[in-house]
Image (cartoon, rainbow, N blue to C red; front, side, top):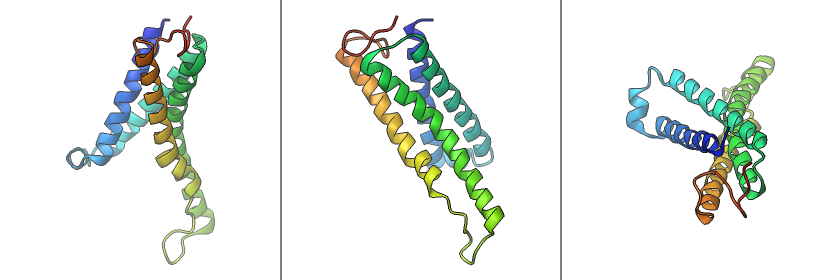
Length: 155
């Protein structure tokens, strides 16, 4: 395996993230995919999770060092965490409703912790990791994310 594989995984993660944002926020895409949106989002979530785990494994296996390693691990961990925390949020919400029932307002089982991690923390961490990786690559005049001197070393 070489650093080109890490670069391919990295850019695939960025592409899937853009697709997820498009499906969620672009009204035309949302209306067109209203019937298949759950399956599309499930597919994109699984792809995002798989690519995130793959990026983490390859970064550790290839012994990437320095700041580049931190940014790649942040990118992979946040990509892995986003679908996991989204699922955990829904699971805990359903369990709280199941055990405590619904009140007059419609929800006793409101669960904000995993929801905030999935909708705020993970996307911000993902963007920080992506931007940091790109900046390090530009600073070192290398292709993303093969590293040199200050950004990290790929063996």
